[in-house]
Length: 206
Image (tube, rainbow, N blue to C red; front, top):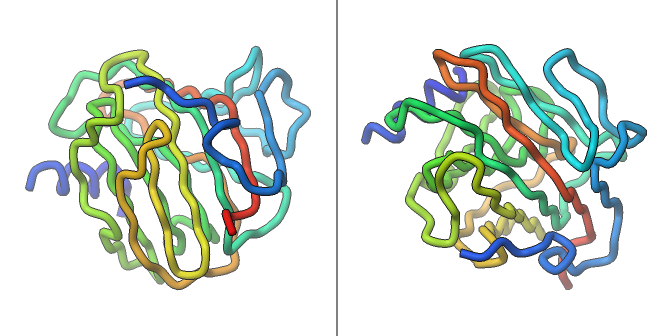
């Protein structure tokens, strides 16, 4: 099932903090996306330049770009996400961080919309579950061009979610061996440009 379908069905029913301040564990990797030499694969709809990583996909498309530095069950990861221009408030595009990722049928993800809504999903063997239900997050800045810091901390079975360095939710899940990466989806009827910056991956807090 496509993320856009999930988001549409679900939605039918501050000050930006620096990731350098948010993720405080022992550093594994940081990237300011100033050049394309980092551990990221290439794709025709994905580019890195000038301090940003951009997903620019045709209408209705989803994309995932993994960090190729290894697989992680536990971690603390942060990234800044700039909202794209969007039209449909009832089925907005989504973007965020995916982890325990093997494919779109087997992964977990924490996603936000340009309207300031956040939710989490867990896909296992093709079955999609809501790990954390969608809700409006006061700490998120909504609207075109607004930038938010998304942080996900995983330690054991505990997954904790942060928006702009404010704890906004948590859920439990069984860790699986998989990669961490950036995930985005375009709006169903127009090209959408999601921009990521200031990626930081550290060990989980003790």
